[in-house]
Length: 244
Ligand SMILES: O=C(O)[C@H](CS(=O)(=O)O)OP(=O)(O)O
Ligand SMILES: [Mg+2]
Image (cartoon, rainbow, N blue to C red; front, side, top):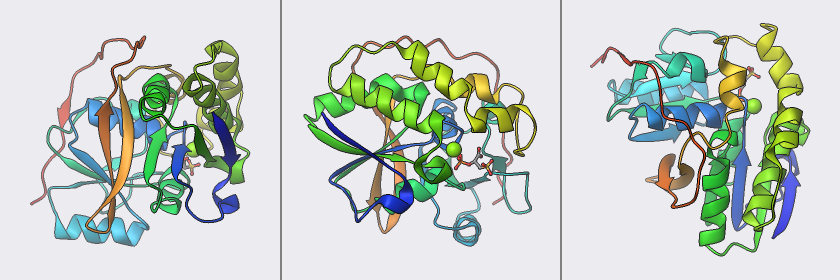
């Protein structure tokens, strides 16, 4: 596979195939949202757009990164989201890096949003679609976030059919600045299990496909028949109140 690894600011227009990587935490959170029953995730351009969508659709679940905020129902934390029942709900997600990266390539013919929890499914979908080239958008730290770059390089190797020892890629992510900031409480809206949950390889058997629907960028899970090593989900669910 011809793989390019670019930061959001280095994209010169939309590529044909884009894999947008945000390990900590947007696309780990998105995968958990689907596991918790969400029907779709709308990627918002701004906090104002997220709140406007929520106002228009009071039953939607508005989620942002950082600390809990007025008007929002959830934060960008897999540890906090994994006990929330999202059955049939639409989530509106706005984060600093991940959602921005996906919106930057919204004109691409195929947009996959990825993290370690959906790595093999993402690689499997690229193989199934016969993609021989892809642009990996490394969303964090202007393209230098090592948790995102390591995940992108791992998926590219797997998509090319090459063997890859995940341990070294996961080690880089575990030692990244993002992991340290999450562990040290520099970032807000954090559960103590967040870093570990972001490092669970192939937890879910679906890829995350984003596409424009009525001018909104919408993320949906796409089951991929590929061997995965995911573990069964554990933990109970708490229903979010509907505010309609
Ligand atoms: O929620 C996150 O981890 C980050 C935002 S920050 O670095 O904590 O401010 O957002 P993401 O877009 O998921 O990288
Ligand atoms: Mg990130």
